[in-house]
Length: 299
Image (cartoon, rainbow, N blue to C red; front, side, top):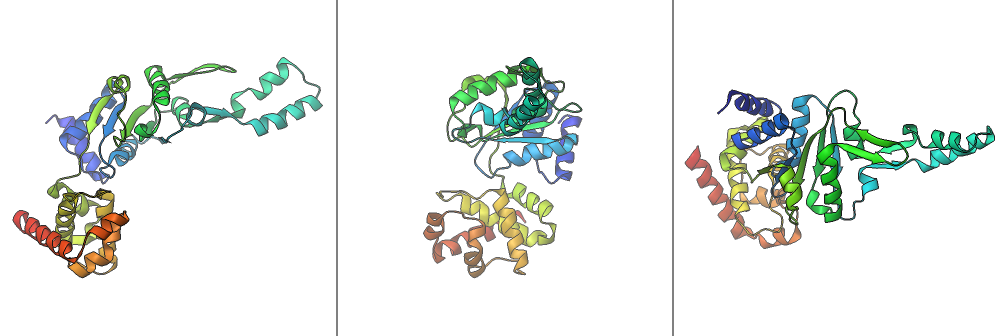
């Protein structure tokens, strides 16, 4: 492993993010090559957290664009502050200003509301990290527009002209694969796929993020969640749910698992009614036995 990759891994772990060599390498290359990084994987595997850690590593601002169905260009890029423009127009008219004078007054940067994409290319001092979260939820038209912005890091505003980035942002896009991201955008990006962590990695994460849990509880939680993820669930629990569960168990003064406490706290892991209903007492006992075997085998 290259020394710079090992150093990056260590820095990420110091900030609470356990990254394997592939993840650290992808982040390093995206930064070194100035390329966007497309990160795919199921919900809860640490995609968004990766962008947050990246911003902390660079000691820079994180700008987040949350995508959703129906997201349009104005919401993502910029809007004019029409109410303030109207107020300034009335003042200008009262002052006797007309024509070009008024237009120059109300169509200035002072009345421009920067949305995430524009904000990311107008930072004057340092390049921010731009997180385009869940790009798969936006439609293909918005994706095509985004490709143009990411290619040149410049935006044309009819009233102001072209605005270019002095410091192009570090771009990280995430996708939960609810639809296929287009080939054109994929070719523009480096690519990383994140899976749910292995048992040992999850235990390492729990020890790092919930150190007061101790080795015994961390291994019990890691083993149970690993066994749970093998079931056909509507919503598979992610690392965030594992951390929440470990903290909940600590609040209840528990350092081990049994069917009663698991049944009472299962809502920390499962966030779907059908998933909760499908797990009976016998299932919990089976999952607990699998978790115990896993913890003992690797202890």
